[in-house]
Image (cartoon, rainbow, N blue to C red; front, side, top):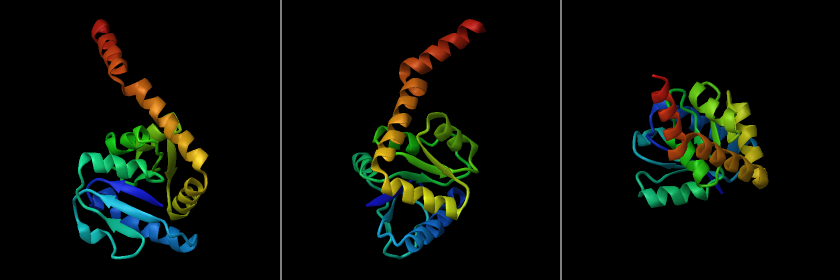
Length: 169
């Protein structure tokens, strides 16, 4: 059982905060759950500890496989402009956990009810415990996210908005 972070490992994406909060979660709730990292960046941000696994770069197919078997995609960055990885998570059937301090990702999650947003380590721990313990909820949140992507970001939806904009100019 694991959660996943996919992307560059860097302080600017709050990877150090994610590791600290995850370690507190595993200790407080006595979980053997792992946090899996995929992607490049500063490997020194990921502690050498049983609850963390850094796989580095993986193929696109392996990335999607790893995401689809996770409990959720976690992205605590406060500086996202879109976050493709939470969208990939929804398409792979998993919800997301994002920072309440990132207006963009929090808005996506809130608009579609596709995951949870957290403001501190206590909320983070409770969110992960809730997702880990409630498979039906995880599936429902992911399905909400997938419907949102289809509605808002499918080729037809984007083309329609683009054509509407052109006709008003």
